[in-house]
Amino acid sequence: MPFRIGIDLVEIKRFKDIAKKTRFLENNFTEKELKDCEKKQAESLAGRFAAKEAVRKTISENIAFNRVEIFNKKNGAPQVNFLDKNIKKKYKSEISITHTKHLSQAICLTEIL
Ligand SMILES: CC(C)(COP(=O)(O)OP(=O)(O)OC[C@H]1O[C@@H](n2cnc3c(N)ncnc32)[C@H](O)[C@@H]1OP(=O)(O)O)[C@@H](O)C(=O)NCCC(=O)NCCS
Image 1 (cartoon, protein in one colour):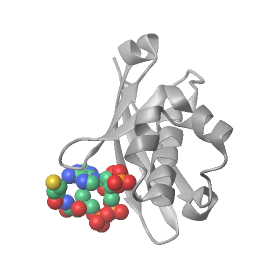
Image 2 (cartoon, helix red, strand yellow):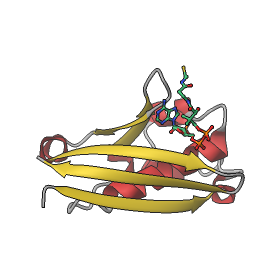
Image 3 (cartoon, helix red, strand yellow):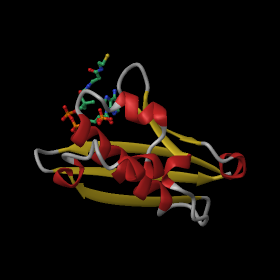
Image 4 (cartoon, protein in one colour):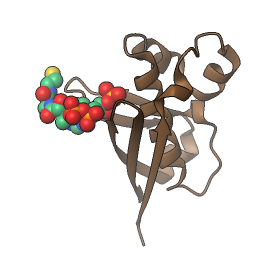
């Protein structure tokens, strides 16, 4: 089957007061993501983390979270950019993210190329 689906749900409070946890941030987010999340930090980080988990559920390789970059297009729609060349060649992933006051959820549909 050429498609796989993944989902994840994250509590936003896990990402509050996270500014000092630099090792955790560096291991899980790219510089671009950290810059993009500056405004709505906890919610944005939680949504991206959920998206990375959802993506990882759809691929066979155990890729590091800071090699799966999530960014927003001009219209706000989130996109996945694999920073690992081999993985980029093998998969095309589409994601969607939603937030409530306490939770961020993401779903991923991956096509195996
Ligand atoms: C996208 C939209 C459905 C968000 O709905 P919401 O109930 O306010 O918020 P949700 O928590 O469910 O979703 C927020 C997430 O939707 C995603 N999103 C934003 N814009 C999107 C779009 N155009 N298409 C798909 N997903 C989008 C983002 O991932 C965002 O989370 P993030 O900023 O942390 O990455 C709503 O803003 C909408 O209808 N927008 C229409 C497009 C639009 O107005 N674009 C103008 C921007 S220039």
